[in-house]
Length: 205
Image 1 (cartoon, one colour):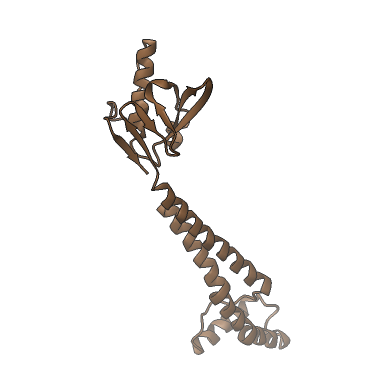
Image 2 (image 1 turned 90 degrees about the horizontal axis):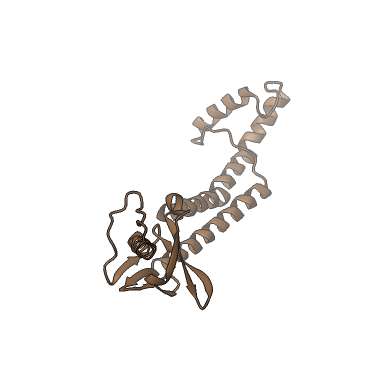
């Protein structure tokens, strides 16, 4: 999550830097230096167009003599600048929202206290009320769903071991109890440490 935040935040700064600093300076070099030089050389028959390699070499010589970037400047329209700035602000604000979401998630937890599981949203489920564990997303995302029933309604408790380390111990204990009730052998997760969760086990986000 930190990597994703840095990626979004950094991309936002990149776009804002282009829109407010880099591209305006490049546009100024294009309008004040490169374009007049190019138009003069084209008029004199020394170049055939703005993309002529001869112009590139002429610009490099000019840039070195005047302490300017040797990369040929491009013409940036007001629309180009606006696009960079809008994209940058959207990503910048998005990074702030993402950071707030991550901080909020780190205040949540999944806890197993005795026979009672408290989910990330505050829902409480007894281990013995879990009828089935859905592991279809476990291998790819580290998410399992504990299916239980309340007042005749089937519900599910999300156990996300990616966000809340320690959820696997809760899942293994639930599967152990389901297997004991059915007389079958409880499945084990690949790479699991094994064992059941101790009382007052907390899976912190």
